[in-house]
Image (tube, rainbow, N blue to C red; front, side):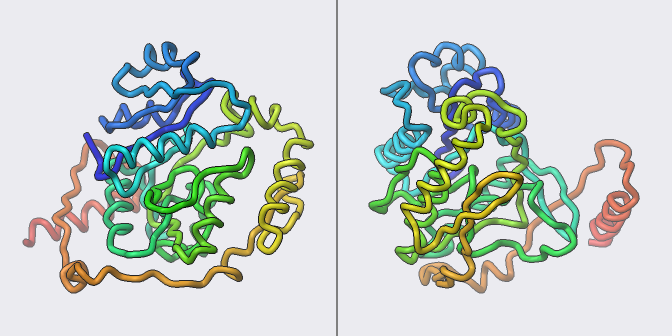
Length: 301
């Protein structure tokens, strides 16, 4: 099953634990895992050759940004104006509503993001906040504007910016777009369920760059980001270690620009023909009540 835009997963050293690929395969989604040549056979054996793309370089010692840029250029060659780029540790998507989280299909999550993003002229990157970062008691907005987009990203292609840092490459790319007045949209109504690589996964940058959470490595990456963006980045201490801090809201307040060639009234009045299907006993009383209410509405119509 294809999405509007191509999907890439960047992975190294995790051919048995590439969670994003396992999840996408389970939902019958089309994608490519970008891997270095020495690991191609292992990934192809695990996920199938149709889902694995061999990169033209290996062991550069630069982190993941060369692979990320390769995916970017590949999507341009194929004629796309955007591309999806995922880290390899995503294990699901959730709909967040009324303080509750409900598991949804990845195709649904990505389609929501694609449709929303393409309604505007100036969205540079959109993506999903993490499930574990959401506070169900305070967050009520469907999205956050001009805020950090992490490892599940829909990226606009036709710009001169690219991935370029060995560490904190996502923060750097976000800032490249923002200082040039592109907007970032971080979805809160749909969330990505990401596994912490720092705590749970070997391979990737965790092994190659961070030396299994060596504090000095975190000090280096924070200082480098500060040197690159001194006007936006402050050094602080978080989670028991040195960390960067960007006050996104303070520095970036430009707004979304609606496309003029689409019917916004039609979008507002659009109704979705969604029907709930009970596939088993609902153990949660709230879910049972929602189901019964929706069933009554269906029967009345």
